[in-house]
Image (cartoon, rainbow, N blue to C red; front, side, top):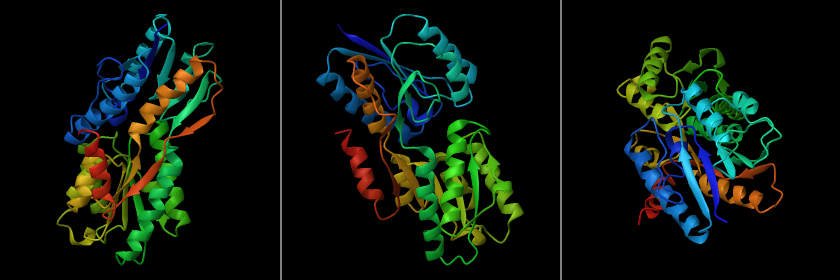
Length: 318
């Protein structure tokens, strides 16, 4: 019997991490950047490979139109849980607490993707562990700031939606890594920019106005925001040696690092996330017991390894 799996994604790269799996469905995304389009193509190649190896698995991918479309994702989850059309569910939640309530009592396998869902119905969480990954980036940023000549290493974060689970985990991780490495995280000056580049520019302008002397580290919830902030600061001598740190490590980030428009990015293995989440769902359907956490891996991309990572990402398109 052919197994049918639904993947409910969050948005941006995660929303397209399983594009075209098992039959060419496309996830919706609020971003149209060239880097994310390339990530979608690469992910499709990987997922097509899984589908080719497992012809008995069919995957549908859906996602809300933005990272703040909470009601839209909630309606999707409610509709599809009650449809009886699927054997298993992969959910990347916008609001994990809400999803916990929605899936209460569901007996079919549920896999949490990228952001964990605290519910007994969830069999495993597939992701990088956002807080630990961000902490790794924060530590690397402090070392880079020291090498750049900063004596007072202060850091400010431009983040996503206030209270959103993934944004909070990354924010906490950045703070943890920066402080453990000897830097000072200015938590009271955190800028909430709804995870979009345009608002990140406004946030960066506010930071420069409040800190004309410069800030050693600017970390951001995603790469688009980090790149936008760095471009907004270009030409400001006080920020010439500022370390701009993003999160995702996609093709756009690698190209920006190689062009000296971004200093570093915490790289999620989005391809691994998508592939592993389907793999774990299939295991559950076959009666296997899953580990509570399935680590998809992470790394910090810098000028030293950006070309290598870019080559790897491009190789998925060949």
